[in-house]
Length: 446
Ligand SMILES: Cc1ncc(COP(=O)(O)O)c(C=O)c1O
Image (tube, rainbow, N blue to C red; front, side, top):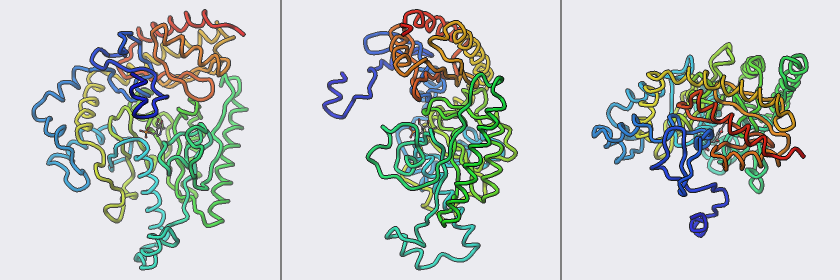
């Protein structure tokens, strides 16, 4: 099957073909009939596992079928009831302080549009109410100032914000994503890299926070001085593709303060962390930020891409934060049901409970198998990860887990990440931990 696909497109990234009819709940079934406990859940994008009966009912409901058959150009022809649908789904779980939401198709286009909204806001502030000039209108058509701006977005080493060209400039996780593509000269600061166990290295890790924040300040100064103003700072609450790298709430609080002080917007990319796996819908809500983030972008478990933003970031003109589809109402219908099920079945609490079981088990394994699992097991809710002793051991563990019936996900250099869906229960954590231990007993020490 892979060979057939490869005749049509380069298919080297395919792991296996999947039988979506047979896949159920936490179990993915491949076309050979192998059933695997899926703790990767389609790169973290399945909110309720496979074939959730409540989601099937949404599609069977005749009132909903219209939305599946007639995909609108949402920015121009929304269906009657669209504001209510947004209110019942996305806005009902909005991060604190957010009343504005825009939908898009995927995570990358959500970030791209958040960047654009940031630039517009920044330029508007600079104009201070002055009208847009003819020169601006004509120069932007040939990519020249003043119509095209020299503005920048600051990002962090190790980050991943998508693979469209603008986002790719802010992505720094792996060279495979970036090689051969042009990139904009935008500021990049270091993301903290802590020593574990955190309790033992509290002072060192605080110093690491200070070092990275000082770099953020320096980059602001360097770029603002040269006229390439930093309009926004984009950051993941946990750097996921980059290897599940965590930073302290204090780091994020201080970053927000510095960003505000420099008149820039803070864009929190919750594409991977959002949607409930951390035990809250939005991971950054664990950080007790003094103010709401300016933008929160999402996709994956939310089923639709998009961003929340504060009212001051509303565009001043139409057609600018815009594309043909601007998301898909059928996905929002499904999301509305997901939000209902999460509440009804208490799934945010379940993520905390199952996450605790995972974290306790992983920490125990890292103590008993220190030759294989490093002592930097980390996680919030079920959003957990652990490092193997080398990149080769990580790859070996990943493959052996598959052979023993567990689908996990690699990230970073030598990390395995757990991204189960919200229906993952403590007994699934036990099954995973048992199989992991079997694998650890089977891998070579040298
Ligand atoms: C944090 C983060 N931002 C953005 C993206 C890009 O999303 P998409 O693949 O939907 O374009 C991803 C994808 O993995 C992500 O993890």
